[in-house]
Length: 257
Image (cartoon, rainbow, N blue to C red; front, side, top):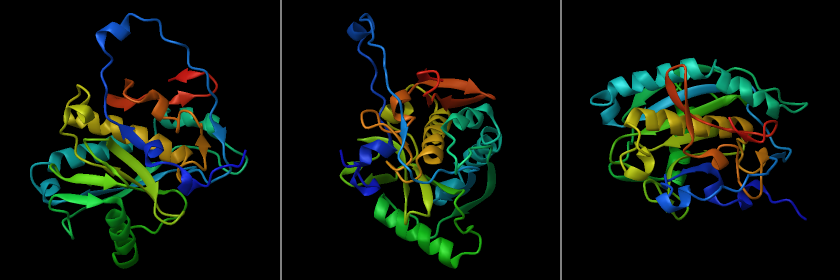
């Protein structure tokens, strides 16, 4: 069977899907045990992730200013936590996954979208910033840009849109520039019963772990049936260091941990 190239994989493999509550009638049925093993497809991993947060829009300077500070504090804690330690089972001879760090942050209104934005536009602006703005670090194989959008901004990728098909995603701009996109959670499907900040940290942890283990979607650790290591565990959370984070799949334990 010929292996797919990274760009052959659908958008759905790199997103946090909408929360779909389990119908009460289904809760009484015995769940079939999941049996899967994610396999390494030979592409890059992010061994010691260096997160750079981008808060894009006027709201992050006003009503959401405290939330931006809290998100940066979340990364400072989580990047040195056991959430990262557990990913070491996905080490390869070339890439050994270890703790990361928050390397910087910026809040900007430069060409901020008024209502909606596409993934293509996000890529174009991110690459432009990296090239022309000294505040943005150059990608070095560990760099992961996390872009957070204002309340009320719709993000689209391919034929899908935030709050109708997904709550966040990660992607790569040129096989070297890795980034995650975080629309502000306001719809029921992206809150999943959580407060907005808890929904943000849950979605961020999902994309953080998937970007580390599969930064070019479909070329790192991947399963043809379940996608990336966060997809199979979507909307299953735990509290870690006082933050809401998503469970991730463990090949060793054959379950979400």
